[in-house]
Length: 434
Image (cartoon, rainbow, N blue to C red; front, side, top):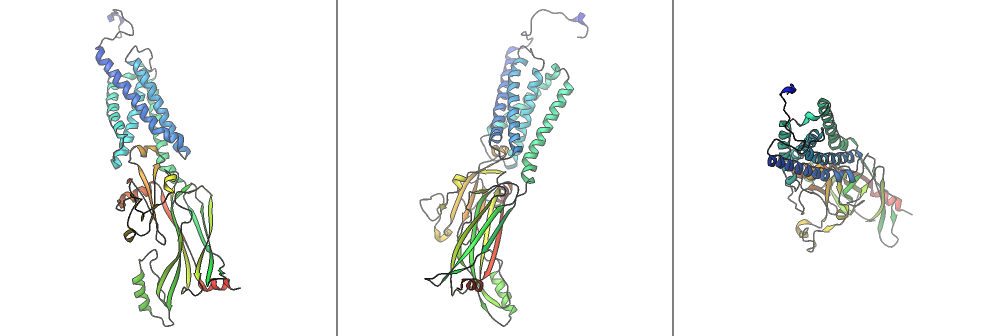
């Protein structure tokens, strides 16, 4: 071909192809349809993050996916030229770039899907598109589609750099950024000065409860409770270590406490006096936001309590990892009501529980398209330790897999914090004296 003497021109223009037209047109149709489908998939993955992600990095990741979809749309238009008149020298390289983007995107989605292997409607898109992208890459490599590029090495370097930047951005937004910001919630519980009731032999004791988001990210409150308990005991001047240890063995592991061991106090018993929510499930705290509430509870003047203690516990979840359907989650469901068919459980077996339920979306839409929908469940009962779980179950089931619940709680950055305060009843009686 270097010697022009051996070249004989027999006519024709850029529209003349020395091949089988049906084969070339079939390749064109399959290539164009695949690129357009990849464009739609990239837009569907990226647009929710680009429009509604809570962090800048996650929004930029969504914008990146949308831009890659636009590149694939341009590549689909260039495919018409590359298998047609070939009037643009870069058309083949642009088609190759679109196919490489599709292969990288579909491979990432397939890799994430293999971690759980749960059925999702998106699987019917990215699995066939992954097979198509492998076929398209083989076809383009065989045709040496990059030969029309003036500087193919610089083009290849640009593609590699773009791929590396994309990978770094995804890694930053999915792994580093959600864990770099500290998460911390501070609690405070404090008793006030008691007041005597003028008409009944009771003391009214004020209780101050505070919570503040002292971390670097907003948090959802998924469950909370405070419980006031009065402690009674049988006191003796005779030290009895054997009796003390026996009672400790009997009480250890019961309820929230591990059991107390005291030398001069035996028969320790705690009685629930008051219990309620603090802030309420489904609400949230922005960075630096504080919530405080004042409550009042009553105890008899001659109550057999030596001390009164309050235990406050709050369960929360990072707001930068998931978006909770707070409108649905705020509504409690009563398990003892037969009208709540999905949550009904006889109170003789389940007690008087309130169940809170709401869907949660991961703030990285790559996780949403490769997983089943997730739901947050919270169970509350007066005086009992609250319960929070995240699972793929859309219906309340007390037999949810503990492994799945623990994994999903870690994925959404769920945590809990507690605070306690205790005051002698003698002090409350003293403050109530006129």
